[in-house]
Image (cartoon, rainbow, N blue to C red; front, top):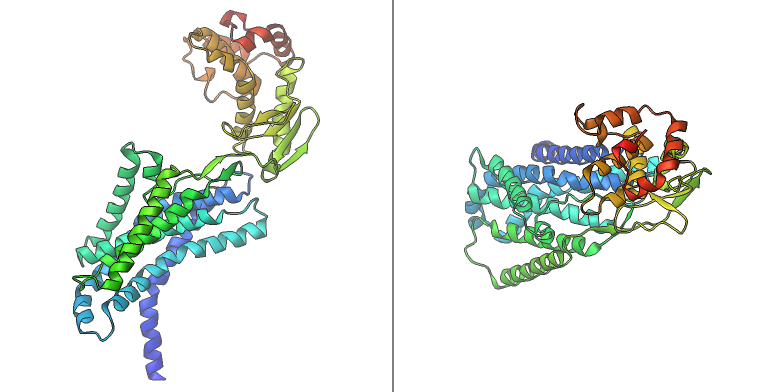
Length: 430
């Protein structure tokens, strides 16, 4: 029993730190996934977005932890490997697995927790598996970078910190020197946001998974404290990994690192009558409050072509294709600002702002239309309310913001053509 007790105590000592690291990284990824949720919504795309953004933080942490572990093993390992009966490769890869394994295990642990949460709470959608594999390979690459860094630098007090800083500095450098997006995507950190209004483009994800996995194995192979040359089998394996890395990187660059393109699945739930609003099922919680916002907007625009009749939630830009007779509504969140912004986006899309984009349009006409848009939507986060009290348009906005709905509606019906054509002047405002 005593030998067994000693073995268990030894295992506990060796396992405590890796398990702690795994738990911390798992908790961090789960926290960032939950922080990406938008108020009132329960969407898998938001959780995946949080996991993606966590790579910017978990990458340096994984590098630092693995550098610390490998640096303390590197110096004595060289003598042990030379005198061992086992091959140096088996010893080295066993230690690499022992060091890196708990770190990369944090990702599936986090995904498992999120999957349980998603199933028990009815989260809309489902994570795209190639996206998750790409994120997992990012963590593997970061851990392998730190492992090789620690082997190279040795057991110095600053090794782990230096590895974490070096990894993060490489990330900042890759994102800040004006490289094409496909080239920036060769670094193991993903900051793309997932959305329910998109079609996935898996080429970049598969390319990153292959690239980062191959590079990780190459880094582990290179981090050999004893080997001076490769045996023929090892040389063939390295050459194969190099080909995989080049192929995966070429696929990422060729696809420009793009994960998504705008697309509307038209998985709608519709409600109401004037207007009728059709929202994606994942946004069903927004029906009642959005109807309230658009009811106020409809009162102001009643009798004009701007009055909404049938609204369909859409993605802004590519993929924005409402059905015949419908108009698009964009909804980023169901909080108060998100709802008002949705109405404001409708007003600017179908109101006079489009005509104001013509080159040479006088500023005062643009300002007059902006004042009307802000009044219609009841949303003034970006517009006339920010003007200095003595600036042109400030007095007009002060008057317009206090106009009763019935009076404003009568004025809009009279001046609709000027508003829609951006020929409205500040003097025309009530």
